[in-house]
Length: 127
Image (cartoon, rainbow, N blue to C red):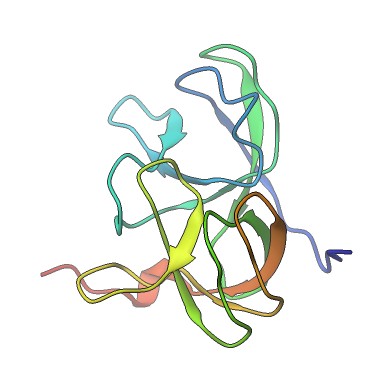
């Protein structure tokens, strides 16, 4: 069972129907709305905790701020392993060239909700 601690959420409008993307990594679109991370290994502002069913609907986002968060895994991930995002916003094991988004606190397999310690994206310097 995944446990959550010290939940710090922010509210943002969704850029699309994210009702099937709860616990997926999101990014900020140029219009200020949050959308699923759209490229494997891309940076993220946080994890969608809501289930907004339409663009413009407010959703809750767990920012990547160095605290514990829940995320849906897309593959096998071991405890202590770094995680990144796939093109659907799900957690995958970090590979070269991807932005690290967290460290696994629990194991993950495809479709499971796992716990991670997020990596503060303010510490990532863009090339």
